[in-house]
Amino acid sequence: MIENSGVVIWFTGLPSSGKTTLAIHLRTVLEQYGKKVILLDGDQLRTGLCADLGFSEKDRTENIRRAAEVARLFCGEGYVVLATFITPFATDRAHARKIVGTERFREVFVQCSLATCEKRDVKGLYRKAREGVLHDFTGIDSPYEVPAQADLVISTDQASLKESVDVLSKEVLKFLT
Ligand SMILES: Nc1ncnc2c1ncn2[C@@H]1O[C@H](COP(=O)(O)OP(=O)(O)O)[C@@H](O)[C@H]1O
Ligand SMILES: [Mg+2]
Image (cartoon, rainbow, N blue to C red; front, top):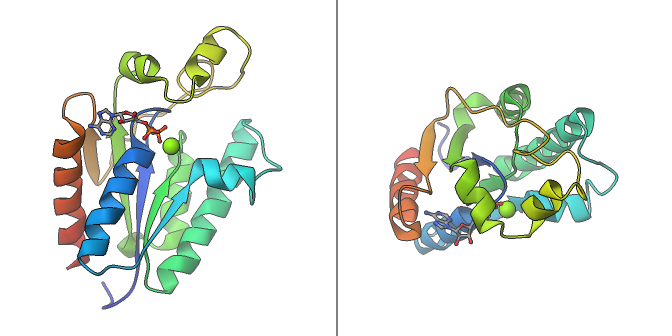
């Protein structure tokens, strides 16, 4: 890796699996090590840059393409980019890796059973999807393709938040040195 270049840590996982929570905690740790960090979150992008997109397969692909392009720009400026997007399709994850450049990209699969994610239901969207009010919801009526070759797997239904953040921080710091 080129010295002082940025990197992109791409979190993928079901809604409520823990992507945003892990990234927020990781950011705190990395900042303590003096790293320049930016958090790029799916919810943020969908209210602005990607507000014109929906949840069809085509729109999800475009959503990820834009996110990866933004990540690439910050990466080029030396940031550690923490990108948190469901990214349900393997081809989109591969495309994001290609856009950023494989040397600077690490995929973190935030693994959590659908049952636990649904129990957490952080934003109440699983309930809406089950009620049929919300359509094309990942895990319910839109697929999530489980990553076969993630660089790191964090199982948030097996470990506490603290344990998960510790493992994640250790691995990411290793990648940065
Ligand atoms: N080990 C863990 N890692 C991350 N989150 C966890 C863990 N255990 C429980 N949680 C909880 O799961 C929820 C995950 O929500 P969130 O981070 O918003 O998910 P996502 O961004 O993937 O939709 C939070 O309420 C968080 O406190
Ligand atoms: Mg989130």
